[in-house]
Length: 529
Image 1 (cartoon, rainbow, N blue to C red):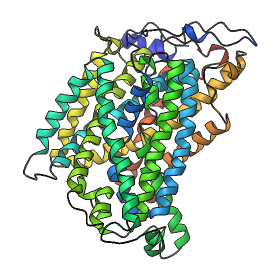
Image 2 (cartoon, one colour; image 1 turned 60 degrees about the vertical axis):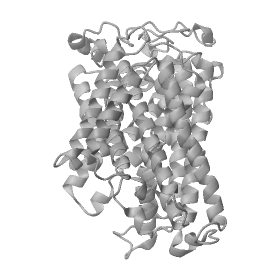
Image 3 (cartoon, rainbow, N blue to C red; image 1 turned 120 degrees about the horizontal axis):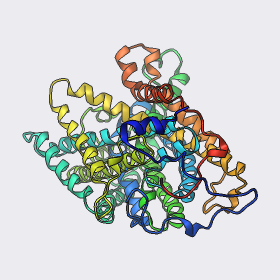
């Protein structure tokens, strides 16, 4: 029976697939292969292994810390309250931790570019790898368009007369050029852009401590706003009938915002195929990336919650510039001048850093899809610097969709784009945990002890099941309010990512009749095929 890669080969010319590759010959109770066997300098895809641990960390920080934290947390605070916001971010952080340690264990043993799709294809089902990869690629490609549009709107904070189109074009050209540079140069640029965000958040935390202690027009605050107007805000739809249920509904709705904000943490795994000494570099990078982002997020939402009442009108503003940022609202309530302009500049840097990272991550996912036979093989072609120029060009071109938001009806299309981006990450988190569970089963079947792995994820398999369950649950309930008060357009907006994934996966299954990869055929070899 033909498999997925044979079918795709007829269209894309791919002749080599993960399933066809010879598995690492490991007998029962035999130790894992020597870590030095991993490709030293370059990968089969032509990508050069030049990135270090700090590069991986800042690429992930650049893709994660953006509008979700600087803008999205304001609306979440206004709709659910400070305690609900803090708990939601801590809870989603635990889910992300389960994904990160699972990814680390796989990426150190099988370090390949665009890790997610490769692991789903090798360890679970080629059709799953295809669907997961294209949904994830679509998510990050569309995020590039969203960030370009946001950058133009942020600049309009200083001059409303300037057209957003000017800045979309300028920044699109800049980041396209940057992503055609050698990966190490790109990573250095991204590191400096991301550093500005980190310094800003640390500075904001210090300023928030001072404001809460009494510096500013409000005087000493403490936990004043947790008492009045309160720590939880019941959902407006059911607040009158069941207040306790209303508070839980508000909390659950914020989980989607927290999930969107944390998306990008897993980008450390995307660069595994371009990392020097991945078996030492990746565990360290993943550990520092997760805890760094987690601490930045938790400290930010905590201080936002104690310094802004959830009934502050500006929190529910639809503005996309500094006026809607909760960080600006904190300093405005304290009566501190000038800082809003500074924060708007930082917000612009945050968006631009995320946009830069979006092109990189989406292009490497496309390389991984091509490498697995799920996309045309020419996307694997690289120049002398190891840059997949066709993949970068296509992913950059998707950013031109940002101009759609300037036309009539463009805002509706962008709402759909945002919905795809929001839930796609949750889908990929769940599938990463599935791939890890299957990875552990394959290791056991082949007689490889997890104690012999370069990195052994703790609390397994329990944490992978935990991450799988809650990632899936949050994704499936992301639009639950539409069932309380039905609206057809809202249903499709909230569930478009899941619909796309089901169509891709179901279509691939029907077309190829692919089945779950038997444990004896699971490819645990270190090399990209």
